[in-house]
Image (tube, rainbow, N blue to C red):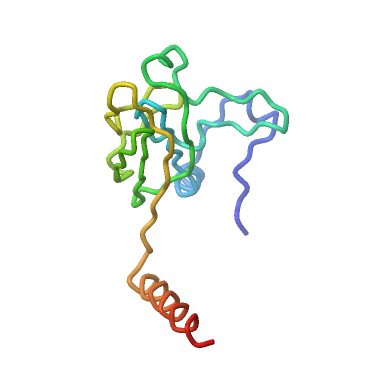
Length: 156
């Protein structure tokens, strides 16, 4: 059975020491969250930096709001893996593909680093995650199902 990660309300207010086993469990289940702003700044943060809130909650800041004039507004935030890549698109039609592992890990309240050097007056309007298949076998499965779909389309 998988151990639940969430803390109860009484545990949140106290400092608790983590056993090595618990630390390894949390580390293994940690997800990275990519945050990208309209002027091309971004960072990877731990999902543990973002507390769970109930419906109708106020939420928390994902970037340094004092730097909004410099970095722009938030465009995208989503979970990523170290082997993923992202594709960013600007309103000027420029596209760039970047490996996620090249983006610095930073805390939730920082501005991040330049991922996409946008031109004057240009803004990032879309960001998509690109995941490669995990193994050669998965890649073969994808290729054979795509080939099978092509073969069946002309048979009717």
